[in-house]
Amino acid sequence: MEKLKAGIVGTGNISGIYFQNGKRFDAMEIVACADLDVERAKAKAAEHGVKGYSVGDMLADPDIQMIINLTIPQAHAPVCIQALEAGKHVYVEKPLSATREEAAKVMETAKRTGLRVGCAPDTFLGGGIQTCIKLIEDGWIGTPIGATAFMVGGGPEGWHPAPEFFYQKGGGPMFDMGPYYLTALVALFGPIARVTGSARISYPERTITSQPNFGKKMTVETPTHVAGVLDFASGPVGTILTSFDVKGGSVLPRIEVYGSEGTLLVPDPNTFGGPIRLWRAGAKEWADIPLTHGKAENARGVGAAEMAKSILTGRAHRASGYLGFHVLEAMFGFHDASEQGVHYRMKTTCERPAPLPIGLADHEV
Image 1 (cartoon, rainbow, N blue to C red):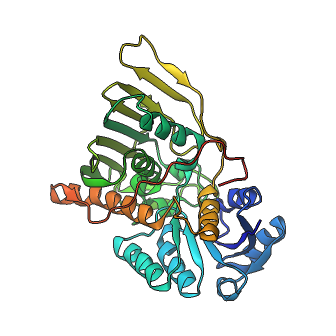
Image 2 (image 1 turned 90 degrees about the horizontal axis):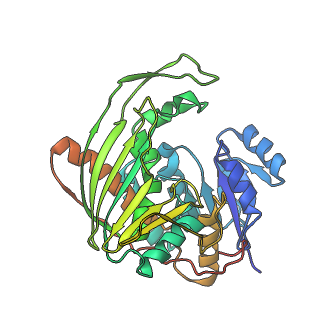
């Protein structure tokens, strides 16, 4: 079968799983990598048996058809635009961009060049969320009424080797983890019509407690505790809480969906699998639900592979730039609503990603 040739830009922590899963799917082959630090790119290339490039040399390579952009959020839009202008399709880690204006420019460039943009997260393509989509579509909870989503913790400075960017503009818990939750909710319910919320910076300065920068102080530039409400165009009302300010533990569920005939406990949207639990009206306890779909382990990169398959076959891809732009706008909308004391009405929309068919083999997308 024909495979789309892809190159990775940005060889940091997350690139490893992309290289690993790039050998797994039948529609895409990762053949090269690049980084601002060319020596690091060459070392990573040698580790994975691919070519190591400067970014410019990769974009000039006519054999590479798609760029997988794994740079830091502030570089997402510039690298995407460079890739598109060089004639490459591009799949970018979340969020699509650090600003709405840059995101709009990415999508305008894609439209002008006739190329595709894909955007992580792709966890909604895993067996967990796909099973939940099927349960809802098959009527197991009746008509969806609402949902809650919670991501609370103490922040990444205790484990990430370079956590500064999490606290700069375009970072924070909403922009770091919110894409997983909001993308899952859009996959379940469709696009968002309006949002509101409250946000704060609880600690203006934070201290790194991980190596190699233990003890270094960081100035916080973005809200670190964000509570929001979402009205979906299809009717349900959602509640979301994201925080880097919780110093103790938490027993809140990741996502719960409430319907006219029952409640669905949705798995962590930062994972690809379960568990899934269902409480139907009239039942006396939770029922554990087996997965109907595969790719329940770490399948990160499946969104890029599915996009590659879609390019080869001419169908719409699921982890699309339009979905990523819509989620990005909602995240900014929570901040805007908090600052202005208003509901923020969404300007973008997107298609709800088509559910994956049952029965795909592990290498199929």
